Length: 198
Ligand code: ADP
Image 1 (tube, helix red, strand yellow):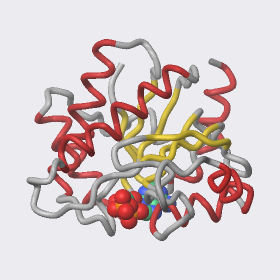
Image 2: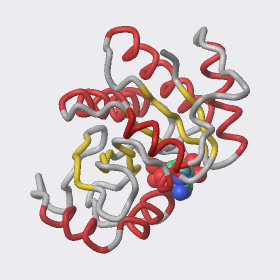
Image 3: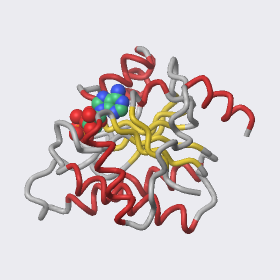
Image 4: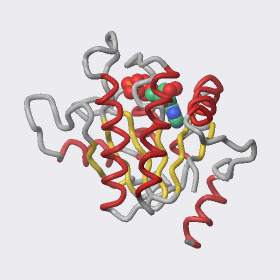
């Protein structure tokens, strides 16, 4: 097993679960969250709205994760996690970002998810330095795979080439080289077929 890196739009992936980099309200925002809500359709917002508030304005605290159906998306589940806003690195940002990955993988195991795709959580408007975030994504996912059988496919999705390169470097630094023709670089149609055959 190895961590896969794929460049493209996470909403096109026919995996068991895609992870959304949401905000604490779960009521939609820009970036990958906006793309996921547009592609899933209005039922996704309704499903998020039905999730209980844990305190005023907060359905999912930073570093936590909640699942909904994926509605019109080709994926089966959407895992909504909330990454930390980057301040200076001394406000628990690394531990909170690590929690987003680790708790998503715990939830994946619980829901018998075999394939999961992550966007670069916190690397957009939340301003997390790209390489530091990529190191956390690499460290957490590699550590998970060492101790668990599922999900057997973990895909780090880069929306742009800078993120793709950061993942390659971080995985290499963690002792896991990324092959040029990695298996995740398949069309959504191929992935749907592969998932159906598993
Ligand atoms: P955050 O608020 O956690 O920073 P953003 O949505 O602003 O979340 O950005 C997170 C990452 O998701 C960024 O690297 C951004 O380029 C990427 N991204 C945006 N749209 C998509 C998409 N459709 N598929 C995959 N990644 C995306």
